[in-house]
Image (tube, rainbow, N blue to C red):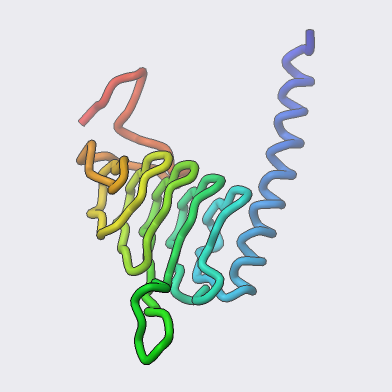
Length: 160
């Protein structure tokens, strides 16, 4: 069995490498034209709109989990024969869970959790949890910190 010091060292090395990779992912996304704040954490296998990258806006201290799709164009709606371009915004301190889909033109407020697999079809106010298809509010008055973690959830209970 590994002693605690070795475990902490291993965790520290993995954290260092992960931070480097996260910084690199955000820099690459910004080079490609996405409007993503430098404090955002982008996990692997994201599907960010490639037709209109400048239409994807993610504000500070968000965590975007693996498999998330964020769109900023609508192929079916046409303007002069071209796809409709619609900016999509994600506010501050949000957590977008695994395989969620954010449709074009949606605005997600600050301190929002989007549940795993949710399909966000319309604007979401700040300080809520949404889930489902289509996404609906399932909890209000949540608060998040700069690590996209709930502040008012402690020891398995909601605090107000």
